[in-house]
Structures are given as structure tokens and as C-alpha cells.
Length: 217
Image 1 (cartoon, rainbow, N blue to C red):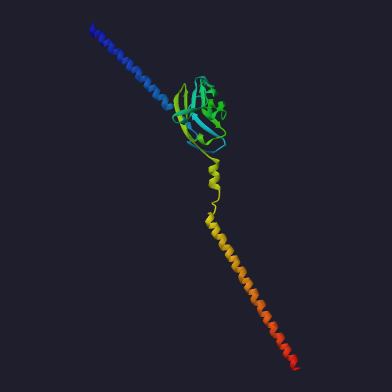
Image 2: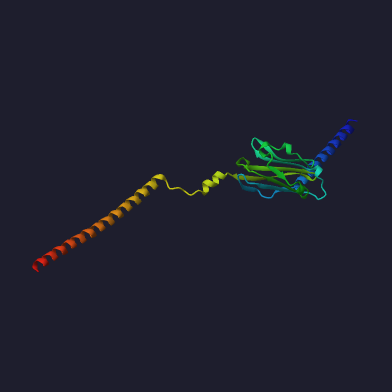
């Protein structure tokens, strides 16, 4: 009697182990065949502009949206900020975090094609970081991530602004220009004075010669 119970218990344990193994293998197979990809792994944008973040996932044409679950988050430690959420094919904008409230629009029509398109407007510098989308359908579960970098307008103006000449150097150049200008003006004045003086001497000499000639005549 004891031997029969022992063999029956052992058989039951083997059956449970086989079922668990099948479940593990099937879940691994689903994870391998169901894939979530990003259109771009990295995005670059400017402050106050808009951008479109896009993910694609494995989806059958005959699959139902009612079994679809999507959670897109901005990974801002220590917690994730909800960007977009779909539960059983229904969007839940009320679960959107304050940081993205009123700034995110989705193309729901492309979900059947296996695409998630999120339009984020009025970008802020604090929107920079890692974005993760978890997708679960009747075909499996997986996730994809991308990075967004938002550049501040002030930083761009600073990089584009021409380098100004330091104040001491500008003053030194002004002094040099003034000195050169005064020197040139002084040289011109000296030359004019020499010419005027020579003409005066010549006129005086010619007058003296004329007077002496008149005396002899």
C-alpha cells in the first residue's frame, strides 16, 4: 500500500514538473517571437519644439485591440513618469504624469499596424532622458527604449554668439589707433609748416633782391 502511494506521488510530481517546463518553454518562445523595436535609438530636439517618438511591435492583422496593453514611461529616477497608457485597447490619458499633461498626442489608428507614435509638443530641457515602452498582446510581451536630448535655446544662442574682444585688449587697440592718428596729424602739420616757412623765406629773399635792383637803377 505504501509503495503504491509513493509511486503515485512520484508520478504526480513528474507531471507537475513537465507542465511547469512546458509553461516556461512557451513563455520563452513568446518572448523570442514577440519583439518591440524603436524607430530611432536616439532623438535630438530643441526646447519649445515638437518631436515624434515611435516604436514598432510584432502584431498580427487579425489580433484584437481589446487584448492590448501599452505603458510608455519617461524613466526619471527614482520613479517612472507615465507618458502614454493603453489598457485592453482603451487609452487612459488621466494616468498621464503632470510633466506631460496636454503635451502628448498619439496616433491610435496605427496600433493595428503594430506601431506606437507619440507626438510630444512644447519640449522642455527636463524632458531629456530615457523613454521605455512596455507592450503586451495576446502574442506575448516585450519592451523597447530610446533616448531623447532636448537642447536649451539659451545654450544655442551662447554657442552661436561671436566671441567678443576682451575689454583691456580693446582699450589697448583704441589707444594705439589714437596715437597713430595724432602722429600722422602732427607729421602733416610739420610738413605744412616747413612748406609755409620756406615760401615765406623765398618771398622775403625775392623782395630784398627787387629792392636792391631798384636802388641800382
